[in-house]
Image 1 (cartoon, one colour):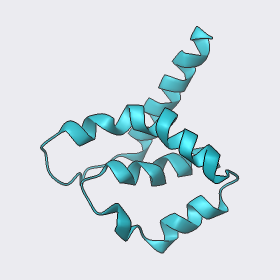
Image 2 (cartoon, helix red, strand yellow; image 1 turned 90 degrees about the horizontal axis):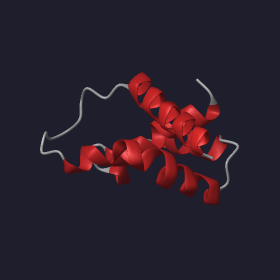
Image 3 (cartoon, helix red, strand yellow; image 1 turned 90 degrees about the vertical axis):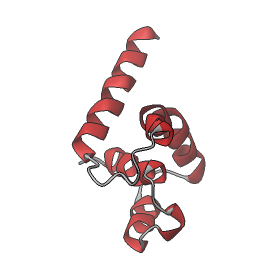
Length: 87
């Protein structure tokens, strides 16, 4: 998994029905060790992760226990690819 994909997975945790404030230290370390500064991480969460994960916020399904990292990476990658075709 690439550094960016790892960041996508960690940042997507904000969209799970759980307490993001309780983010494990390991998740924080992945973000800190990534090659991205805070401004870039902010852009990644707003422009890449949010559009794919926002439907989870609208769901009343409760805690998302069946989260699939591969599906997340696939959806974000496909969205980015389709955007680059539009440019």
